[in-house]
Image 1 (cartoon, rainbow, N blue to C red):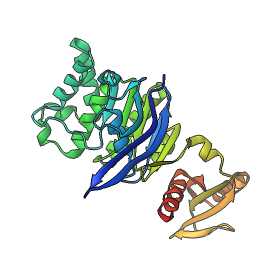
Image 2 (image 1 turned 180 degrees about the horizontal axis):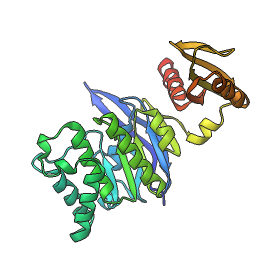
Image 3 (image 1 turned 90 degrees about the vertical axis):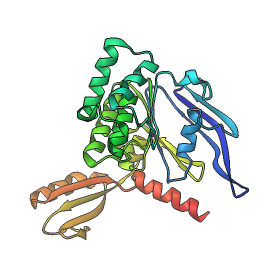
Length: 297
């Protein structure tokens, strides 16, 4: 059984009497225990795909399955945590009531319900606002409440659509850490994000969609490890041979992997400060390339 299985999905919407393709033969899968980043520009088809998976939309053709069951079968969502891009929570409820009622829907009651509710309100940093009405909370606090609801059920599969939306830098780091903790504990994670660095850190595999079509899908480690050339940036008084000034006293150079140890030793000898090293063709560069090619087609 696969956690998610999407085969040949097609979906079109009508705009002023004209059919606009949102999904065009989209196919991919997510294995149990795998972490998959679903990436693409706004309007690429990510949220449409997720809405089909959760029964909020019906595909024109193709098949979508969640935890081995058809996506339009409500029992497929039992034990699955989900946070949409713009979560709607009943405004008259409090974060404590939202998390507690979500747990009850998944069969968690009594002392265990109370324990998990308090635990996840604390972990998401909203325990101090646990009894305020949702309508009085900021977008970021509402997002934290929705995330607490999804994590608290201890899901077999966690689906997050732009989980960092509305969060400040501290909140983003906190949620990324929780996603990593869930992933390393063996959870199955499927998430959409515009932050490609998060995909490189949190995903085993990525699926890239653009204009309703899947343009690339590959293992993240496989992509990064396959690159022979590395980009290196450091802060220093002078540039090493082959390095160009990036900004101020920041220098940037491109070199083959085998040359890294020698260059790092040179930077240390000149008391420079290493800023970052990454493969020439990172996920961000691949994304820019794929999207650019599609735009010219």
